[in-house]
Length: 429
View: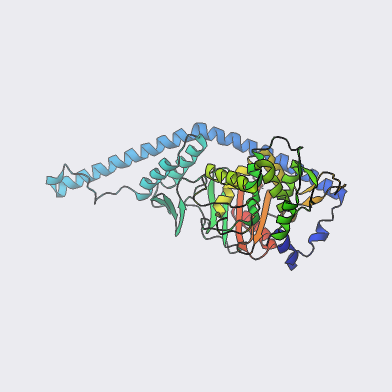
């Protein structure tokens, strides 16, 4: 079962059809307001990026020097203390100031340095993040996050060390009770830290959130959005037999590649997603190989593996909410993906079968924009299969201009997904 089926059966969204009867004038006004807000947020994000650039150039070296200086002073202080103690109580051991059973080096400082070493790569932004994490964990009395055996322990929760987004001592693993989803994560994209998480490293079935990776992989290969593709009977049958959401393309209908992108995301159309996969790679199987290559490129192949481009349930089609957040991060950094994932409505091109096109809508974005989330939800994609419950991933800019990514999975309705995302944003941003 996929998105449309769940929406039809859910009494909480019985107004679905009425809500999608679009008034052209009002819709144009909403688009203008959203465009103005997006431009404002874009300018704010550019300002933040300039500030972050200055931080990378000026603050990071100073932080590293400070950490080294503190470590050296601590070592000298401990050596002097041990030396004085040995001279007073055990003169015969003056040459053995340290032994393996008798050291006062702070555990958090030692493991924090290991974490920084494991997470630093050639990019300056990750070096800044690693130095920042080391600084946070440098004081054992004020930090609960410790890196042991390649993992970061925050309270009773383990995260992998060296991830693109890192847990810190400030990560909230006791997520507010206002969030009902069994799995959730909120990432601050500005500094790549995990703000809050609940069972974020456990296996989930991503359902139609899969399509975020579908459009990302396709966007990196497509060069002409006006190129045409003919829908086949195999494609329409695939969507029908698997009870998938669909745009409503018909057999032998010739549509544009642009239509396939928007059709994959807005109504979560399996017909569009499968068409896009075949257009790019020749077959769904070949396209899925490209998807898994992308997961490996993103550093997610240990915990994520996909078997189809649509999001159908398969025991071997899985990821974590953390993985989905990183996929969304990569998608919003792609101009085409960000444009498609942020669209509220779209009308497909005119065809013989649909002379006026097909008007499609991203219901998640259109409903969450009416909620006070403390900012603007720019992008979003939902999903549903029985094995995953209702789930969603969204990209958000707070009123202060900070970007966040939220993923929730396994809750009881599509409306609950909206409330959970709003609760995460209002509680932690």
